[in-house]
Image (cartoon, rainbow, N blue to C red; front, side, top):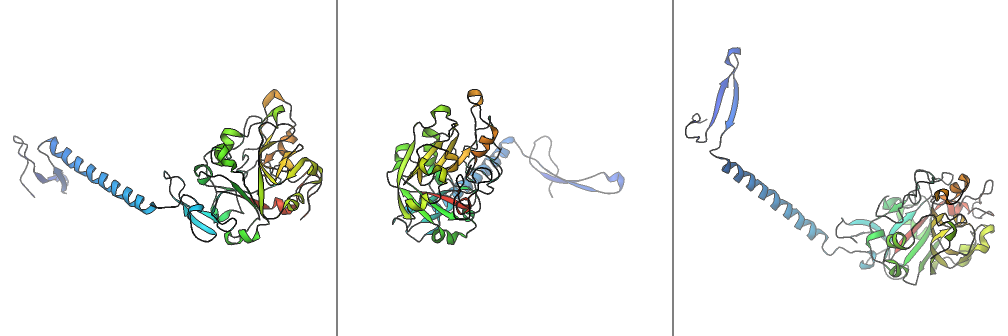
Amino acid sequence: MSDALDAQTNNPVSAFDAVDTSSGSKHIALAIYFKSEKGLWKIISALSLLVGLAAMIFAIIAMVAVKGMPTSCKDIVGQTGLHLIQPDPATLPFVTYCDMDSTGEGWTLVAAVHENNIQGKCTVGDKWSSEQEYSSKYLGSKNWENFNVFGDVLDLTWDDYKNVAYHALQASNVMLWHVPNALAISEISDQAYLKYYTNDNVLDQYGGSLRSLYANYAPLNNAGPSRFYELIVSPIEYIKGSKDTIMADIPSDEVENVQPGFIQFRAFDTFGFPQALCPGVKMVTGDSARICVGGNGAAVGDQIRVPSTRRKVTCGDYAGWNGKFKDPGLADVPSSSGRSQKYINSSILIFVK
């Protein structure tokens, strides 16, 4: 290769030296020398500069790729179905479902509530309540109130779902669809048997998102004796269905305890256990666990004595919808205390605009 290293001048050379000849074999060692550390740092600096430039180029490419990306379905001109949006510039764009037909402007799907096991109380799959069973110490998943995201938009009627728009998209109103389970995404609009939305800009009053509403104004903690305080109730307009459709599936024991034509955000049962959402009605009194969804079954320690059986009734995505013991609803008809199987085996899709 080159001459040996001059030990006096420290001039840079490279050499292949034969070693360990006693064994009869020769091993080749490559040595690279530098006149001073300055040369080494120059190379490191140059490499660092190249890495920085590459990162900047990729960042610019990424910015160009999402430039003009719609923040919500309202910004999109197109058909009902799956669309790419980016409500939060700090996160990547994602695909969600857009309803373009109901009111003439795009509604953005942000969540879906689905009961995978009506007999299981706060068990695996109950992401809107708790997957750790009922407890006096555990206050539920808090997914109504936090920034978690989960699920797959293609599985809206198969599993619970929540995307970034739930907390990041500033919106005014809320729309709910009741859709039979186990449908393809292309079928959900036609197969929904209830569609209705708020018309009072309720989210504007509570921070502009569902996360803000629950986290800052309607936290899902046990209320004890103050169970009916600070109710958030919004009137609704129907796209599909009516007040009669809603009331037809209210258990007979609870008919006098609800008023149709509303969405209620948070309700409490007689023990102060919270439920997150009352679809299509507001509670006047009575057992909200039989009517509303998203109950976490959290008690308040020694403040009240609550039977464990009661916590079970109030703990689960659809909490007490299966009714009292030996009193389940029929296929299309509720019982005295339970919802119909049609409602139990449906998902509630949540949109905002």
